Image (cartoon, rainbow, N blue to C red; front, side, top):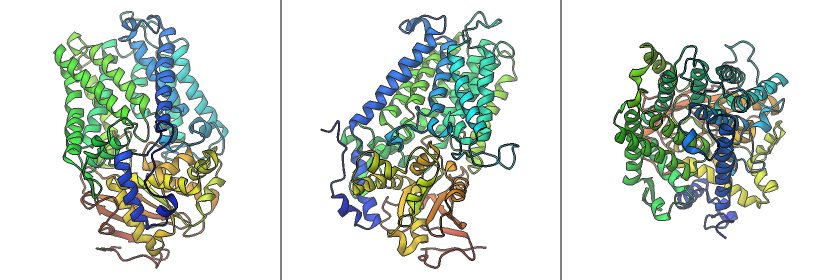
Length: 602
């Protein structure tokens, strides 16, 4: 039955695995174009139930029953109340940091068990990744201690406490409007920052780059900010998220994101999926429809419509813009993107209605209505800092604070294991085994079927621009041994090691590889990583490195994004050209195959 059984590539798994790797990528990428991951509809149904029952019904019930704004069914009484907005943000923070929001379940490579998050972060001796271990005191090291666990649990508790206890206080000086107690919001903000300084995984998993500003401005309500200030600041937060994302999509990568995302939409007709490619099965480059979806309905709409929402004092125009952004987030939700940020999209759909229809700029909630003239430039500068810095220096800022969600311009990596070496990752202290073992031992998959499932993620990566560069460098580095190594999508592997990933290569760069190596001790050649940084907004190249876990980084270089974009996922013309800027004089292997256009500098 299609509801219970997955769609599978039309070839015997053993026969497929006997083919050369690039032939496998071609077949699996072509399959993805029509069927996506091939996940059975039962899995999507589980996500829908989780979203509707746990998140929507549970969140609305908690928010309304602990506030004096009517019960869950009295929608007309509470939909535009600031306290409900605050509590739904807190409820989202709680679920995300618990590990049952985004990046949960099979679509995020959590097959069995389906929950990472708390199973890792409430367990001592798992890996943590501090953002600035050499600069921030008391954050060095990569081992999670008992104090880290207690800090994490306290942060979770603070979110839940702010939802259910003492959070219906009427703030003096705000016109009697009910808000969450600012002291509880300040407590949540402070604990989240401390968590993030000890472990960037936790801050990013909570989506702190978007929710922390809301916690901060809420903690200043009544003492520094008026109700109008609070609402306008919240508007600026969401508009900068949208506009930052739109600007980051004005690149050569984004067109390649839309077709595989639509292909993975479980309820999209096959003819719609096929229409996003130039000519299946021979040409998987984006079609004109994909370009229109990316740069008209996507980039342009996400840039223009939020600005209309922010500045419009025309009620009809505002309502049309609200409807457009709600549909935008519902469209993303129904595609079930691999990081499955479903709760985030539903929250943003609600926030759009709450902020811009419930607090219309023409009714005194516009940027010109701030109580102090200096608030606008201060808020804009503070909220724009990381998006601007992250696009100029992506090596310094995660793609999430850079507001590059869905932009296709991601730091990424491919891991390669010599025969038998991958199993050694199971020596790490973590509640879940490697994904291949989860599929075989936990789900009962035959080994060859499990391997094909894992290689589907490689095909997905190859459909994006950076995947073609990663596989090119890997072919160049491994040479004739390219066919003998087990290749893995690093984002999925990272999930089983640290419990969470949202497509951010900064979570599995050399910091994580060093942490793994200290615990396992791979021999030279057993574990090889090709890693690439995001493209800076002002450069035509992406910078990569090759790392042997036992030897460290052995090669650095760049490739032109334009060369990757123009190629097919399976690289029929061979590896794309690369420019090698440095090689380790002793440890770089002699087996390396010649490059097409090598340029070597010291």
